[in-house]
Length: 78
Image (cartoon, rainbow, N blue to C red; front, side, top):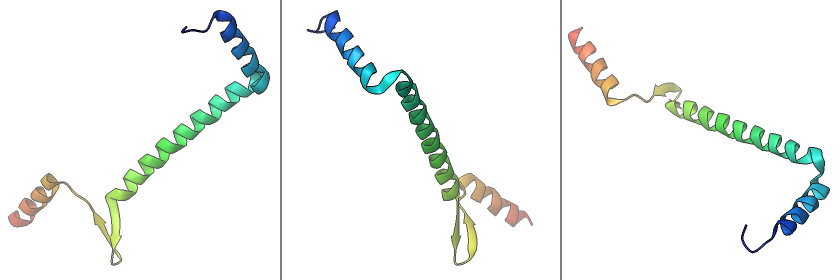
């Protein structure tokens, strides 16, 4: 535990519990978890929004090279 003895750590623990109280620490952890979940949801929503864009009133979807090649082959067969 470094240069601190067990008594130092116990005093720090008591001070932290006095400052935050018994119920405050779990409440803070719950709020932090909600923040992380909303951040992840926002990032996934942003990724979904980037795949479809509007240009000059038309919807443009980004496609991979394989999808474009398959569309060209289908058009040439018709």
